Image (cartoon, rainbow, N blue to C red; front, top):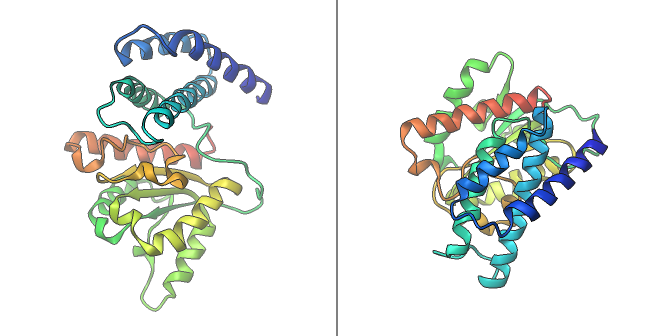
Length: 261
């Protein structure tokens, strides 16, 4: 599969250069339809996912180069040049959500460390969102080891229990908001070991943006694609859209735990 992946990624780079970058199409959806048509050349869902992942990387890199040159590395407010790639990334992300995950984790250097837990990192000020997510995971708790700090029993050493759960985490779901980003405990005790687990031990980071916040300012986090665009946080979603996001979160988590890539 490694040789096949190299070929697919090279195909994606060439397609991006020839058909997407600088295309004369005005609407992002037209470029997306072009990409969708190209996907028919790949038979397996894994191949389609690799191709889309590489296209996503190429668009993201191109967009960041523009931001570095024109806006000091930051998103350009009301920049017409950015509207099309940002929309295109959103369409691609939705398509990737229907395919096996191939790029949400880094290299595994300690494969003997067993990881099977789903860990929720959140600010207690966002507790209402945790309750909603717990509801969506509840039908699957017979075969998903779902953990958040409400599982800590009276008398237990809470920091030790959190550390133990992180050491067993396969999927880390980060519920991002300004309060999450500003939490001293999260930034010092939860995020570093979770990000290290993703970097070295095969854990997977899934991010849900709850409220408007400067998520893009945090380089250790924004390298991971959020489940929903930061411009479309959960707070701005209607009931149906929010439910679909949470269903997809459970779906992605189940795929990861089942070893689907």
